[in-house]
Image (cartoon, rainbow, N blue to C red; front, side, top):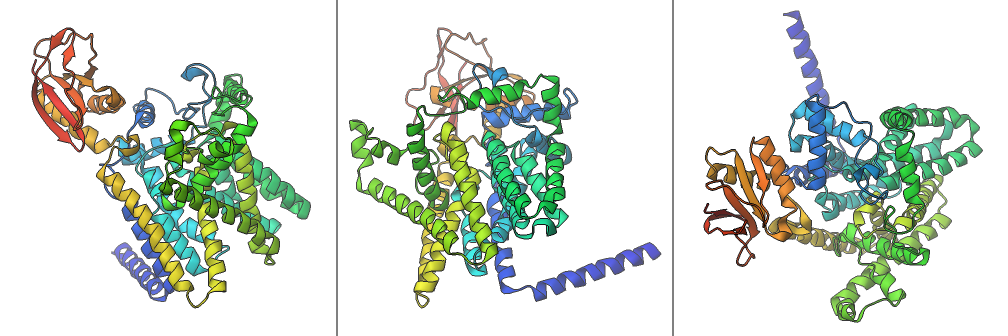
Length: 557
């Protein structure tokens, strides 16, 4: 009885405190809360149905399942880097295991399902929204910070990766946490609270296990920042030591693995860095060519991450023009009016962005704001240098710079507010609506054509496998052939089939299908005269069912 009264009293006090906090919340707090709620909705909407389950996700899910089922111990290494090493998978560089630990813990709590394994990515994607506001608010006004956070929340680039379990997806969150924590060190030095030392250690310790680029970039930035701090205030060494202690603890799995394997993984990584061709981590070849490609890709990425105009693959347009390497067949495509307008907008945006960043840093009198700009410049410069020898077309390799174009836009908005204060509000609203519209258009295109960018959706794969299993009646062995361009779907369907207790057999041209066995073909609405010849036999189409623009044909056997 007394316990119930005590509990009721505590709940009443908690409710009073909560309602008081809501009543006293400032206007910008309500605006930020609305933005966060919108971000949660956009990132969680149809999360299971639209969860990307490509080859990488299937491999990770299978590895996690073996741990949960007790068949293997918790891994000492994480995902392998596809462009590293020379030879098969056993000779590729492997990241630290933290990403797998996130997946294992999540699946252990919420159930051994593909979407449960993706919850950490969803969680960090949502948390990156308030963190983004806090980071922007370190330099910009609340009004501009809210506007930038709103655009980040509805960004096509950010949302595109929110419905997937993939090690790079949490990079924006840990990048923001890392930079915010470093800012606290730079501003307060020895007076930095211990919580920031721990958060910096966590951000650094986790980030180096998410991608090979961060494995070089984050420690490089930290070493330079710590060297500056020790010069200014040697007493800060204790908190720096705490940072490295956290990093070591979070990387113990990999450290143990390296010691027991004669540092084989480290040797592969160092060997990959020493190569300048694509047999290494991805470099184009000569350093001048890499430099031009690096500049070109950063220009394209800045504009694409903000506006969704462009592509998630850099086409190195500027590098090709400067290098006079434009082929005759590409000339007409490259120099159309829309393409020239897009390239000009990209070039002007980045040129002014980087220029204003340097200009503001040199003129800034406020020490806190100067540290902000200085850290952003250092991070961006070292990113350019780290990526230089291994530049790749994929914009996701620059995901750690997601915040940068928003800073460019924020500086531009500040200048406009000072130059034209009377019409600034109209200009800001126009810019916001224009950028929001281009992102919304890209999102709408993605929803209308779910297979754009090669995505494979979990819900769709489950429906397809359910359809085939239903048509197969009591048979637990199903034969499936695919149109050539849809072969990549087989691994995902096979994974779903195994979870449903069905043996899915890939059918090729020389395959003899047993008489009466369930036989299907995967094609699309644009497939003409689907090939139905296997093992010298021709099979007629019995039934077919559409799944968006994919089609499952049931063949008569």
